[in-house]
Length: 402
Image (cartoon, rainbow, N blue to C red; front, top):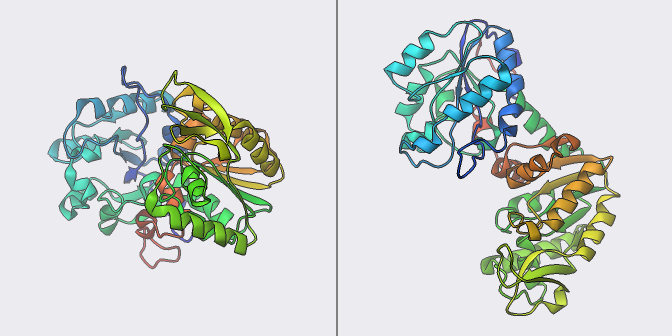
């Protein structure tokens, strides 16, 4: 990575504002954290700063409060979990800016950690308000971005703050950029991209950008319906992106022209409704009734994908193979997760729901790398410049950070 990192600066006794991605999933009924992997992923940066005597100020969003204070989205439960993991008390402010918050920061001693309240309780955060950015910057001497998962957003805490403070990368962000950049620049072959999820439109840029680098494209999930429809298959009542049919056809043609083997499902699980308890059956893709919906990849498709992936040395996976939230339609996704966990290959999970799936299955530590960024990882692999990364100081920058 060509940006300065937290290793390149002196942080002892400095107030260090660290943008983290603590947008963790919460249990709908109890409000408890159901997956703390995003918290654990940024621990190396937090511990690095603590060990060097920095006064650490963490800031994050949680959920989509849309500029209003929503008690269920307060970061108290997150601060409690961070305290448990670090083995030291981590306080949380009542607001992320303002005089009371400034007093709390002023009371920090070397090695202390404080978490600011949900940034998105202020609509100014998502608007990248200069006033809001300055208010955040007043709290610190140095800014560290360790929130790769939100670095594709031009928000005040991601971009705006960097205009007022020396801005460097955290250890997680550095690892994300280096790992994802590695599969773009020098992947071990054969290299496969396993893609699922609902929409073709989310992944077009990435598919275009990696087309000349991959050997195999394996497509499942809801997006497979659009590709199947573009291949003149009946897909019944499956949701397709009508405006992406030509795109899907073009990508399939481009794969052929680039010598890329593109595999679509040959059989699927279909159902009347994509809900628990729905009647389901397995059929070949040539025999999907007009009144049914595709819910998962079928057993022969799973075998076909197995055969390809077992031969690969690098695999990037983003998106479930079916309606994973419904257990009876999760078989294809679970099979892919188990297979990747068993392979002697570089296996990279592209964040979002895919990261949650492997984490919930207890397989995250069996993968080479689990990205914390869904949209950010897709954007990065699509060749997009991420605003949160671009805003950081370049390596070799003449600006002195001391």
